[in-house]
Length: 285
Image (cartoon, rainbow, N blue to C red; front, top):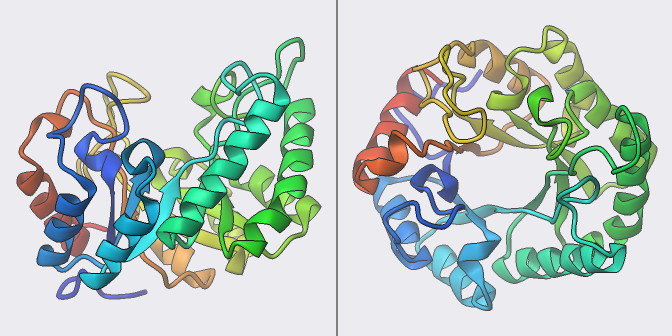
């Protein structure tokens, strides 16, 4: 297991940690200001949300590389299934392609897929997971041609109805095996998988399919399941054990801090948030 106590160059910032993924939150920093702040603090990478990039993907990606910062990823594709997916289907496919194009323009290594919830008119998860597989099979060759990897991210079961019919790492592994394309892998987010007693075995099974590792914590008294994630060390997730299992599976990439926190961290000065991320990464992650 890597020792980060004196080196945080493996830390990446997901800009959601500063509130940049939802209108009305955050300090309003430009992508360039975020990049410069991360580079100054010695972080290794940054992950943006599409709403921040607009038509400036190439420009922003170039700025990051000039500072020595890696654009580790982009959030995210549209929902592919369920009540929040764009309609008609072609609108979703067009938006999926646009997200691949943006990731390629940024030079982002990974495009995250949050798959969407249960298809209207159906029950359970099976039919919706089948649809996810069909769509990703269709889009994976396009992503590969543009040198972008697609990371399926299982979400906590509480989101199963509307945001993600993919709720376990086991189902993510099963999907990857069905899709069987080298451009498709998995993003592992502490917030969504910390509770899963089969996690270590499924991480071992995932192996080199692991494309990203996301850091935060689950608060014992969570007030909002979407917008009340904890800073590393403030919750009940066994962060050291999870990272040990992730790295034992072969992952040696960046660790991406991603904290949705409308009532706490998003209200603090960005420099305080960034410095706390570094301190917690080096001590409790």
